[in-house]
Image 1 (cartoon, one colour):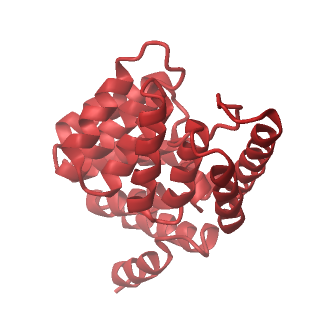
Image 2 (cartoon, rainbow, N blue to C red):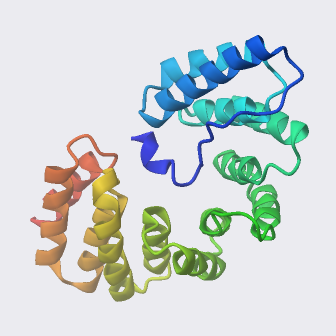
Length: 250
């Protein structure tokens, strides 16, 4: 399930600079590539094993440190993820994607002002090829702080850059829901569903149902909850959807 979030955290598999002998550098880069492949395919224990081997050979490669941060991030070890992303940035302060990852990790650690500061640095890098990512991080940080007007602004900008961004589309819908604009939330979350279903991200489906329920369209809400149960049998909102469906039918 975590690889649905890869679009938030770009994974590199490039060769970094090092002072190692060529043979050792090649070994480190091989483990880096294998670990990155495992990470992208959702095989997280194998990914971590390979990336730790890469680090044991070359601990001065910022790409290895960045990918180790991602490997720990997907296992919810945000403390270790922060350690490694900081190492990546110490080795290469201009490593913009690592800085964006740092912002995302800080969000999960509840340090929203720090996350906002880092995301703003990323957003100022006009050479960065993923401009939607720092805007999404800004929107997420503001959302979790309860600053929904700022969240709406940043998430809308992210969508302007990347219309198909599932996370931004979904979080914008949830922002409208928190603002109690349920009709607009339902419309936005339905839009998010079309982008998120392929990645098996059930959040917009669930909140779409809640939004329709709040507007009084119980039939549509029930249909959406049934879809959550059917389409996402292992999803985060499976049990909540069942409970809400029972409540709606009483």
